Length: 113
Length: 112
Image (cartoon, rainbow over all chains, first blue to last red):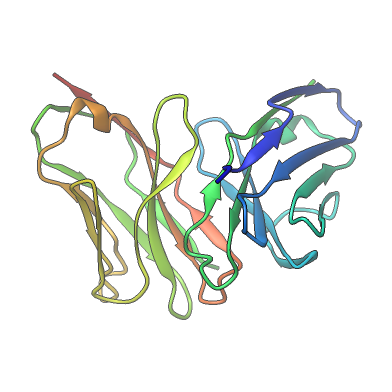
């Protein structure tokens, strides 16, 4: 059973650019959630996808968007990057109905200059 | 809105000491409560959970009881080990299951 994987591990972008982060769910998991973790802080919920549709959203602007594919992998897209977007981005997969147990990936560290 | 307030750290304890990390929450409805742990260089892992009032979650010697009357979910361990050194996060999930809220984390260092 493979775990949750994310790519890339690190990324440097400049303000105003766009970025796409990728996540492969744990085998058999149909729900993916994305989180932003600033340095020294707890993860903040961005959104959740289930069956390729957004199933819940935190307090993030529309320039944060996502996709979920039929194989349950997922992308997080951030447009018009700002300096404050610098953070560790985590994805977590789970089974709908057993959503209490999420399995987290190692994260993508994004630095916006 | 829903939120979690967690005891600030860092916390430094000697091996075999008793550990308490406080967590209180604000939520509508009937949330589920969690403790996650992040060991150095590793990803977040679920440590324990409780899904209704008076439930006790337990794992690896850690325990936490869901107290609705005090809106708390304090993490305890009777005798910590050096290997328990990590950052601990309290979290809650709303009763619709599609929103999660984490505390700011408490760093624990256990010295021999």
